[in-house]
Image 1 (spheres, rainbow, N blue to C red):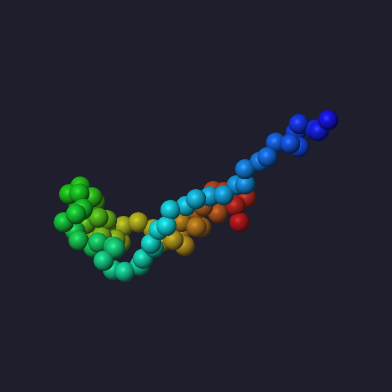
Image 2 (tube, rainbow, N blue to C red):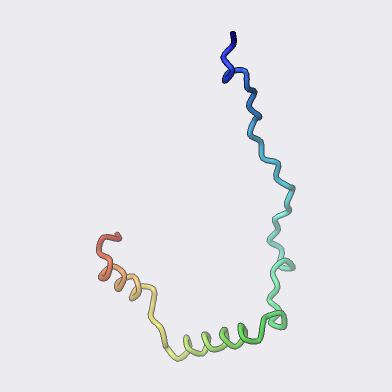
Length: 74
């Protein structure tokens, strides 16, 4: 008698991915501000204004604070 486990044929794992076209042309990315939601546009403008006024902290300062708070992260 054959071992029933060996007689089971496994399907080969094969992924059938659809073809996709990945492009980096400028026409794929829209810089048109008209397509942005008004609230998002307002938030972006506010963030730019805050950056010009010097609000916020630098990346280096944030990394220093993280290392002080979580010394086990290196």
